[in-house]
Length: 189
Image (cartoon, rainbow, N blue to C red; front, side, top):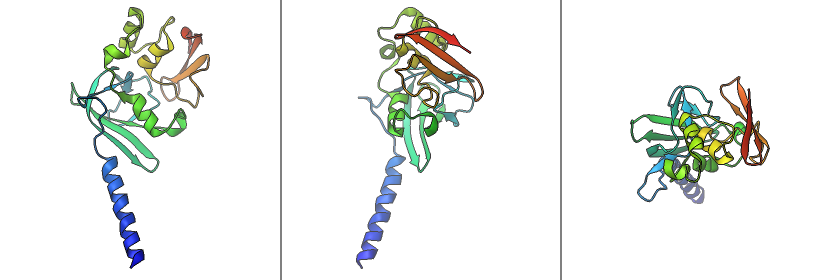
């Protein structure tokens, strides 16, 4: 009898966990969340946390709704609807490219409560223009680079404290962003 009760409890807890993992998550006061950096995609339901800089760009600060965080074994992703267009986006977390933290940390970097104005607060007009284009330009701060192209895959950039960051533009092409202090000094192909 005890074994049956324990087994039922374990099954019930597992079922509750699956249901909770699929529920929408909100963090804004009114439930609104925003993309925290520019996100590129060729197929909206197959976007990778590596953030290849190809295809269509979803601008930083885009309002999103109906956020779902899915964690099923090694398959983890964040799915949301772009409020303005109704487009559904699914971003898969690629663990081997993102050692900065956990899946939860990735989710917090991807979506948050800062709209575009809050994300670019304190940045120069040139930095804001580059962010709107999704580019990196000499003279940009590290903060501006993060909003413009997201976090570099940790497989090639172990820590953000390094003097250079490597991004993948595609599966085969990379760029290296070199900093002097906190400012972009050069971009190498």
